[in-house]
Image (cartoon, rainbow, N blue to C red; front, side):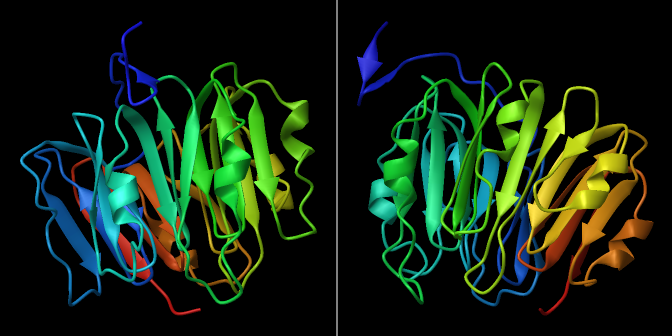
Length: 278
């Protein structure tokens, strides 16, 4: 197979997740025409400057990035937000990219993973880059400040946390996972969850997800997990009780929660958003 920059050429596959990215106090919604819509608050917001079509977005603390149809990543934010933007933008043949405060992780078409750890942080950023180098056969990743998660092609989960309390082997018992998500911030606890092929959810953090059924998408944020049901409504477990207004949303096509915000897109194209202070 032809190679370039250590990654094989291959057919790019668009992912279902990635139409919504949430930063500290704003969210980015990727419209069908590759235009980006801002929700929330960000006086310094600007559109990404690229002639390529954006097919997925990710967000960190006060900035965001886009994955283009040529399988590369372009960043948009202040210099302090992406101190290693040049390293991120040198990636090629990317099929999935995610970000949070402190880290940007990418899955390549050959199933390998790389993570760029930003040098800033109150107590120093955990070194996820060394952890993910050993991962293989990965199709999706999720990342938090202190945890990182991967989903293999055969439905298994790899998980790493540096908080000292998380059971990193909780998900080893499953081989039917179709989606993973995790999150942590530098002043809170680690959270994670997985979606099974039968529409049920498991989590090492949230006990009540055991009762959820008919889930088609999950999202984990700051001490919260949301499950999108097939009928367009949502299930939610929120340890901080900040986002329960969003439980009234209906007719949803996708929904994401990160930091202390929730953003959803309805099946008729409307954008719903809720941002709360911690």
